[in-house]
Length: 388
Ligand code: AMP
Image (cartoon, rainbow, N blue to C red; front, side):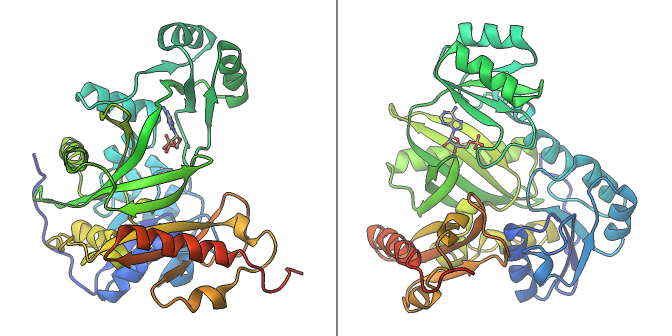
């Protein structure tokens, strides 16, 4: 059941964002293009979104009075990563509408709640068990076996708080390293491919998606996204259908990503939900009539969804902090490639594992789009001048 539609917030309105990373930055670009204002709230003084926002509120999420004050300056509030505090979002919701809802954030920011929601509603997931103590772990290893993945229930993203375990001994070692009593133990999936479906749902229940996207992870962090995913059309359609049903069950208003595994025998398993624009959807900026960011804006403002028609095949590679290890990457070289789109997030410090930017390319041929971004990234690592 879709919620009651609300009167649209038109250009000139102000959007409040909890979080201030690169997803917020790209959202701000889309919102500004349509004539909206953006205010951001996060603890970070110099942030990718803060640099391009009309106003910045720099406070910890635990400062609920500051959150309420921030909320009074905007017309609607959204968020750009799911580890913002649900309490902060609820406090904001006392003042202005919050979309997607606080309940969706609560469910998706806690792996156990998320997996239980999916399993209870009949969506396919890898077998998992909740772990609160050593006895739970012992039972899980006996029941589900190894290899498996032990994941902390909270604050997990980009492989943080996650251990692949091959034996009972490794499982117990990981449990002690985790230092939390809220975990899940999940069967290791020997997948053929990882997929994501990014979609957006409005308050009338209309959904628009960008099809199935193929993702390659390195060290648990997204490395490459390819659209459309190189899978049989039935698998792509089934992934989209699953994502739509999940969005409907959540009564989502906004953009969401559903991450899935495609197993070697052709089954789909849902791995994770993110109720916000997603790294794998960056390529929608160049490859679609409407990007995931503009669509997020449209949905939370009550505007009709835009067309998600794709303008070609697309590939995106992340630029991680490692690229800076030998000095400043060769920007002149990448800018000399006319088909490539460079995005840099304005982060001052390039640390290993930190997402600093990305490259995207659109082409009529998918393999050539992939080759363009891969070649360009390799060339970027050629150092022009050493770092002091
Ligand atoms: P997550 O934080 O759950 O999205 O996990 C990050 C990445 O770790 C995924 O995209 C997969 O590459 C890998 N991963 C997570 N869970 C599993 C699993 N049960 N089996 C195999 N690989 C996994």
